[in-house]
Every structure is written in C-alpha cells, then in structure tokens.
Length: 611
DNA sequence: GCCGTTTTCGGCCCGACTGTTTTCAGTCG
Image (cartoon, chains in turn green, cyan):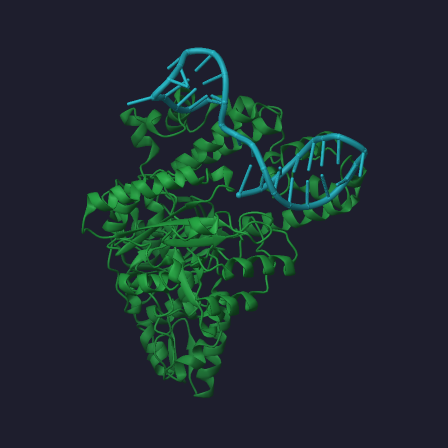
C-alpha cells in the first residue's frame, strides 16, 4: 500500500509511516472492524437508554474502542479463533463478532433494539444529551428522532420539563449544531485511509493508467466533505464502468462517459473524473482548489491574457500547457504551490515574490515529544513505544503520561511516577547506546486555578513537561488565559499541549487570548504544540501560522496512545504545512544535542537528562 | 460484560463541572 507521501512536492519520507507499511497484514475489508465497533457503541447507548448496569455498558464501549485500535481484520482473527485475545473481548462479545462476520447481523443486538424508535439512539451522540435526558424527552415529549427533537425545542415544550431552564436548552441547541457540523464532514484521519484504499483499487484496474485524489483531502483540510478523484484512461467509459463495480462502492449515483458519482463504504460521496493525459495537471490543479485560490489564479491569468480551466492554460484557442501542475503555475510565472497552502491566504503573492515557505515534512521530524504508555492510558508498554520510535528512525522520544488529576486516564501518582522513572532508567541501561534517547516526561494538567498537577520539585526531575488543560473548559476568557499564562510561567514547563483544547465535531476550543499566550510562550521559551491526533489538530493552521510569524517555538506531537498512533504524527505535520510552518522553529526537528540544550535551559533542569 | 501472579465472584469510574437546584442529577472525560 502506498503511503500518503508528499513526494510530488519534492519532499522525501525517511521512514515508513503507515502501520500497513510495517509488515502488518492488510485488512481485506477496512470497514468490517468499524462496523462492529459501531454496533457495540450503539449497543452501549441502547443499554444506557434502558438504564442498565453501567459496567455492562462500559464493557461495550471499551470493546468498540479496542476494535478501532486493531490493525488486523476481524474476519481474519475470528477465522484463527483468536477473538478473545483482543482486550475487552470475552466469551459473549467474541460470539457476537463471529455471528456478524458470518451473517452481517447480530440477533442479540436486534433484540435489545426492539421497541426503540430508529433514529432515537443516535441522538445520544449529541454533546450534552445523555441517556437520562433522552429517556425523559422520549417519554414526556414523544421525541423519537431528530425531527421530533427539533420540534420539541422550537415549540418550547422542553421548558416545562423538570430541570430544564433556558441555559440547558441553549446548551442543547449548541450541541445539536456541533453534532450536525461533525456529521456532515468527515475527519481527515478517517477519510484518508478510505481514499487510500479506493485509489489502490482503482490503480488495479488495467484501463486506469493513473489515479489521484484531489480536493480538500489533497489540501489536508482537517475535515472532508466529499472526495474528488481523477483518473487517466485510454477508454474512459469502460474504465468508469469497472470503477463503479469495485467492492468498496456501495451505491452508484451517476455514471457517464467521463464522470461517475458513487457512495463508498464509510458513507462518503466520491466524484470520479476521467481526464485526457494532456489535461491531467490542469484538472488536478482545478479540482484540488480551493475555490478562492483558483478564482485568484484565474484572475491573475486573465490579466496576462490567459484562460485557465480544468483542461489547460490557453491563449485564445491556443493551448499552452496543462499536462502537469508545474506547467500551470509556471505559465503564471510562479513556482508550484504546495496543495496545503492553496487557500488564498497570501500564498499566490508569496509565490510571485519567490518567498514561499520551505515547508516542514514528516521526514524532518527527529522525535516525538508527546506519547502515552500503559503507565497511564496508553495501549503499548514503555519499551514497545521506544522500540517503535526506533523503527521510525527517531533520535529521541518523550513518554509523557498523564498526571494524577486525570483519573479516567489513570494519571500517575508520585509512587507510580517514581516506578516509571526507575523503569526508564532500566530500559536506558538495557538499550545502551541504541537510539532513541528516552526522555521521561509527563502531560501535566493545568488545574482550574492555574496550578500544575505535580509539585515543582517533581517537575524539576522530569526531562520534558507538557502542560495542558483537561478540565474546566468553559472558564471565561480572562480566567482561562490567566490560567494558561500561569502554567507557561512555571520554569519547568517546556510545551503547551493542545493549546485550544478543542475536539473536532465534539468540543469547542476554550476561550483564550491567543496573542497573549503566544507572547508569553516566546518570552518563556515554551513551545506551542501542534497536536497530531486526528480528533484534535490543535493548534489550528491559522494559529500555527501566527505563532511562527511572531517567533514562537512549536512542537509537533502524536499524542499517541498506541504504537500505530505514533504514525499519526503525520496529521500534525499536514496541519503544520497548512500553517506555512518551516522546520526551523519546530523543536522536534532539532538534533538531540540542541533539543537537550533547550530542555535544560533552566538551571534546575540541567542535571536531569541522562543521555 | 470483562477480568484474574491475592479473586471464577466481585470489582470495575470517579471527581469536576454545569445548571438546576436548596442538596442534587446529569454529563463528561
């Protein structure tokens, strides 16, 4: 499987970056695990709605998470009889998975769903709307799906319910907006593997000479609406006919001689366009967008007497080019602009003046400074994480487990932290001179009052301190800003983790005076994180750009909770590229010696890191 | 419903926050 490398932009990739590149068996049905995970998730919701035992509910939730983390196909595991080796899968759930693999349905699930209106349970995914509220709404307001919920809110019937005030109703409205937004757009981290899978299948069709994804996926936007795919074929109608028969295609919405529209597994709509070879670059440029970027470009062309469309660049009827993207930009007297920059945020002017940034690439990273292990809520042991870092070719890795306030994540109390330090020391001895350097760190909660979750004398003994907000997200702007500034002012803090605190489609960012935070971070030499978790991508592209322009240091972290997730750091890099980020200010592109000097910038820290 | 190097039964996810209360229920992580 071809990784999503950025080779077409002249960048190189040093290490394999997909789990599929790392000798793991390929899934033969990438959606099967997800389908079962969704059923278990739904089962948990149904049981919660019925007010069943919370531990039973948790078991289903845990199983769903566990399945999503799986690299192998469930059908393969079931075949081998190893289902119960999956964490969180016992006798009963294994049986249910087997049944699903065989029959594509689970009788027990259907039994539990009986009598519950379709469309009711999914409402529980609305932030702020839990099982109790939903049960109440269902009983007292006849809410049975999204429409009836909306009606109940608009008619004002909710305010008559016990415990329902104006604020609660406003919150529910906000939750619905978030949910709708999250529903319409898919996370980049979900869409990219689907695109990858589709391209791989398209390229296997003999009549397809080339296939690429364009659109917002190619620009690496954090969420994706639909997918645009381009192909070259000598026989477009027949190639498209074969394309819509691929197993990943669930529904054919349109099929013509040069274009097909389909719905693929995962519920995403795909436009497949077949283009003549001489127009391919122009088409790739055109369908990559963004719209604003293209409008600006075409305007520029017109000033020079050129017409630009998806078939090429023309003067009158004379075709000047369009075979590849370089030609298109070249005819406008500018170098190729990386897809991530094409948002009309000044990149065209920068290209004309030859001051485009030299964008960071995955291959520039020399380590990961934000990871979790089994000491807190990670899935992989300390040693497994270090070993995977070695496979990625990293010079260093920081293991930054949670602090005690993060109870749900089994944050480390002082005893456990002591144990972790000892284990790291043992591992360092065992590994000798082999890379990577192992840094003992913590992701330390910034408590509601701005204090940190470990005392200073403990922080002083850590090699890397990532400080982050994990609670009291709704504090007013002044209070939240003061809280974060307090954390930055602590001399032991190195990185401000996921500064915005948002989760895509699920939680709004915190209210923060970002400029003041950047200024304080610069003064203190603290790096701002670009968190690579596909659910966070935080800083945003715009914030990252502003931070770099102001002179701030940055760190790109995977926030990995398992070894495969370490590879997701690429999403942080994509986000950085969208923010015009160059390698220079990103501390984890630095060689270890330089990173070490930075980490040891405060006298209290100088003794700490053993190398 | 899962899990087990004290347990095959009895633990497991409990504290913070919000909004609504006047002592607490629901939701979230």
